[in-house]
Length: 52
Image (tube, rainbow, N blue to C red; front, side, top):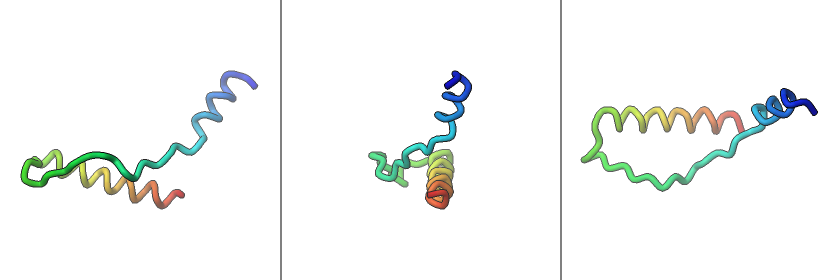
């Protein structure tokens, strides 16, 4: 197998889905960037769940 084929195979494999991150979110301490990041993470989780 050539180096290019090996790299293509690695790029095409499914990555594991992390669902139980050890991250604490405190709305009292969150700024707008934290809220936006939380929403982006939730959207990404939804997209990833739809691919499984």
